[in-house]
Image 1 (cartoon, rainbow, N blue to C red):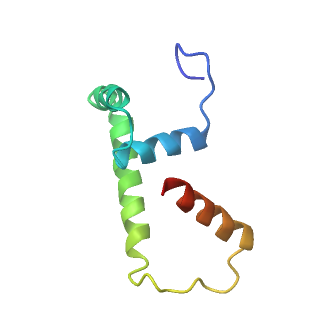
Image 2 (cartoon, rainbow, N blue to C red; image 1 turned 90 degrees about the vertical axis):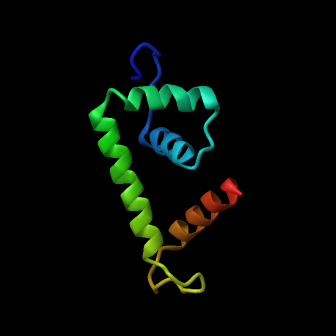
Length: 89
């Protein structure tokens, strides 16, 4: 549960929020509130830094946009990635 909010936050909610924060897509008031929290929460600072490193490493894994997926990648995973990519555009 989110303290004082009476609502359960899922991992998916948190990841979407964090992605929006790092992509600078959050509304200014939410961004300010989160940044105020980061000033006093070393655990969240560490998590955000770890998340940023993970995203950077994943991006660096594919240097050529024309790279083909390896054989055996599940079709439902490919569709989910494409759907997520298309929803951000």
